[in-house]
Length: 137
Image (tube, rainbow, N blue to C red; front, side, top):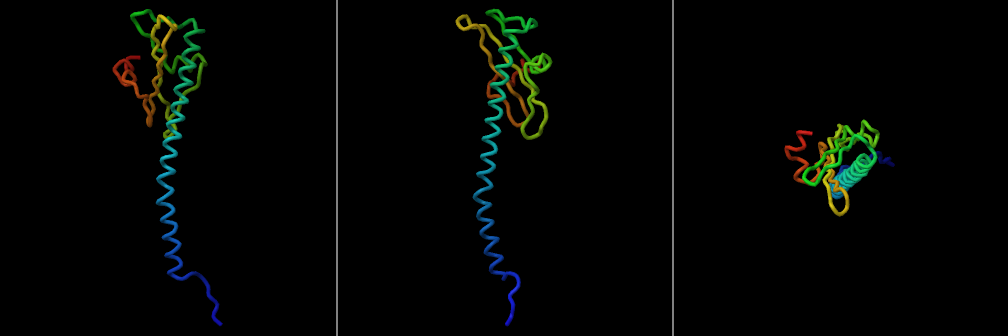
């Protein structure tokens, strides 16, 4: 009797076809899931930025409140240097993100806060976040 060792070419091809089909199905879904999770992480970081800016505006004596006709900006370096939050890093590259919060006076509620997060892979979807105002901070 002959002992059969190894696989036939047909068996190997069948396994390769099955693995290729599974990869075709699962790889795009995995990539989509990773992108969605990164977006959620950035949104969480934006909310942390807002909370830190509100604390800074409320408790720090260096903050000058805006009047009705102006706006103030709280930058990431201000928040980090005063220990209101730590640096925000890009989820893919690991480089430091730029961030700031625009503070305006609201006659009814006190202040309005709008966060801008500028990373390699993500930028907050607000026009003033990428305007020339940001570059002058």
